[in-house]
Image: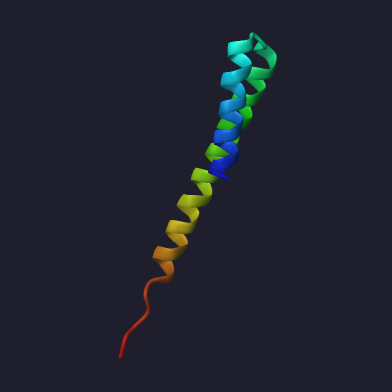
Amino acid sequence: MIRWAIIFFIVAIVAAVLGFGGIAGMSMEIAKFVAVIAVILFVISLVAGGLRGRGTRI
């Protein structure tokens, strides 16, 4: 998912250099949205892994 955020960020940078303000803005918003979703899912997976624990060893 981070890969998609990076791709949209690169598209936004290229569009900004070429002068396409609307495309650059939209790509940047999509990149931010995907990055936020990726961070949220990462935190959820950390919490779920922490709650699950390592179990008991005998």
